[in-house]
Every structure is written in structure tokens, then in C-alpha cells.
Image (cartoon, rainbow, N blue to C red; front, side, top):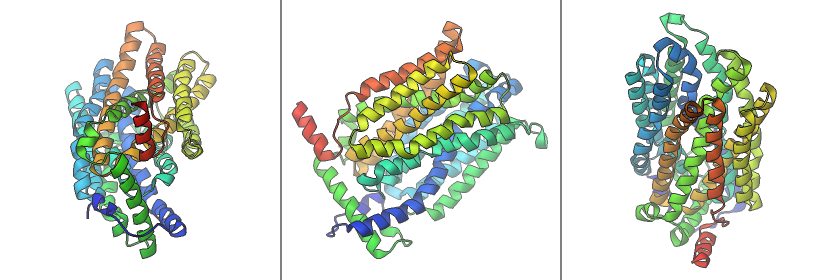
Length: 448
């Protein structure tokens, strides 16, 4: 059975107690593993930032070549997002997400051979293609399990994967870099090899652990399965009447372009910070990137997790998601500008506000498309949004490097990333106030 078939009409009203019991059970079963998967995916995107100093010293790769290689990952990632998510819609998350993790983990481990500009760029290109679909596939999988009323909290918890990757992955990457010479390998080679093989192993486990739909959940009681299926079917029916559920409706919807452009700018800020945060912290501390920088770099992400625990859910439950969204984006932009000129202690404090803004803006953003898109439109729409966001991942390191080179100061690289946050805030001003497909449709009719 595919995820789409789980949304067939069920003549049962979801009993509140059974529904909440089902959601709680699904949350305990699914969310920790998806967080682990996303944590490894995010670490795979940004561990080049930790390796940058040692890698360039070992290989002689230039700053321009490194920025291009770091960013080219997102071009192939963007190209393969849509077909990957359409395949996931057909074959199910269990098979496809597991396959993604195994192949990208093995390619990531092969980064130990990236000793020239060409090899670095080529492997990063292949890595992007193999990892494509993981994040939007996970978002789509979450919509197959959790009703709209619980999705704000679920998405905010799922997003813990990114700060966890940088909180624990930072010290881990720093530790592996400090093992330079072990087994005759450079520290950066040990880092790529270890983290890649761990990812492949988790992908194998995913094939046996994940469950595609509530209907297949043998670990849930029959009453819980029925209540959860009924709630999801009711929501899908509302999307069918007022939202977008077909591939054509998704791809020709101007709202999708608006959402994709907003997400691209958010990704420019998020990845523009994540790629270079270790380098920035190292410069503030006046030391090379290693275990010490890894620990200090983890501080802003600890604050990000604290904000992510309550802020996105508060935003959604209050019915005022847009003002909260705007505040997150402004925290990113203003924090980056302040960090460019403050003393080390105040710069780290400013970066804490930046990471809190990044951590809270993204789950709030995803409540918009998940409320409007259903069926194959959700699989396609989420992939398109994340594909355009992937372009932001290519833009981020190159934009920051170009601004820094053109004006001769690292501060201008931070200004460029901050500008993306302010532009995203402008686009958010034009997002709908509505929360459900019916309300969105009504708002669009009034606007016309």
C-alpha cells in the first residue's frame, strides 16, 4: 500500500481519546528515528565547514573552488528532488528513505578521495543527487501520520535534527579532525569516512524500522489505527475540495512559487550560517578549528533547540504564525549584522539569536504548504519547494565568499546573508493569514 492509499475515505469520526493516543504512540515511534535521519543529513551538508581549514591545508584547494564545491551539492540535489519524491509517493517511505541514506552514506565516505578541485566538486555533485528527496520525503511522511492540529509541534521537534547535528556533530567532527594521522589518514578523511558509514548503517535499519502508513502499523491498536486514519482522511478530503491534490495543481499554483522563493531565502540564511559558523567562531577565538571550536560552535545551536521546543508550536496554536515568522527572520538578519562587529562574547550571543531564528523560522514555514497540499501534490510540491531551497544552498557559500572578496572584509559576507533574511521577511508579509485550505480558498476569492 502506498502513502496515498492511506487517505481513502473512512466512515468513522476520529474519537479524541483514541486519536490522541494514536498520535502519541506514532510520535514516540517515528519522530526520534526521523530526527536521527535528518541529523545525519544536515551534518552531511555542513561537515565540509568543519573540514574546511584542515582540508584546504592538506589538498591546496582554493577558497573559490571550495565554495563552488560546497554549493554544487545543492544543484544536483535540486534537480533530483522532484523525481525522488514522486518515487517515494509510489513505493513508500520505508524503502525509499532507506535507499537514499545508504547511497548517500557510501558516497560521503568516498570523500576521503577528494584530494583535488575536480574530485571535490564531482563527489559533492554526486552526493547531492544521492541525498535528494530525504528532507521533503520526511516531511511528506510526517503528513501521512500526523493531523494538521498536531503538525506545528511535530515539525518543530523534527527540526531538532539540524541543531542536534551541529551540537553533537560539531564536537564529533572536531574530535575526528584532531585524530589526524590515525590509520595513515588525515583528520578530515577520518571525519568523512566515519560519518558516511554511520549514515549507511542507519539507512539499512530504516528499511526494517519505518512504517509507510497508519494502516500498516502493527505496533498500534486497531482502534488507534482507525481513529488516526479517519482524522487524516478528513483532512485530505478538505484539501481535495479547497486545496491542491494533483500534480498539475501543485506545479501550476502561483502560491507554490511564492512559498519556494521564501524558502530559498531562508535556506540562504540557514546554510550561509551553518557552513561558516565554525570558521567564524575560530576567528573570534583566534584558534584553529578543532574540538574547542566544535564545543563553542555548539552553544548557539543549544539555544536554537530551546527556542525550537516551544516557539513554533506557540506560533501555530496562537493563530498568529506570520508575526512570529517575521520575528524569527528579523532575529537572523539583525543578529548577523551585530555579530560582524561585536566582541567575541557579544558576537557569540548575537549568533545565538541567529540560530534561534533559523531553528524557528523553518518549521513555521512548513505549516503553510502542509496545510494546503495533499496527495501527489504534496509529494511534488514539497519537493519543488525544497529543490528551490537547494538553490539557496548553492547561493549561500558563493554569495558570502563573493561579498567578502569584493569588499575585502568578512563583515560583508555576513551582510549579504542578513539581506536574504530581510528579503524573506518581505515575502512573508504577503503569505496568507489563513490556517486551513477552506480559509485559504476564501481569502483568495476575497482578494480577487
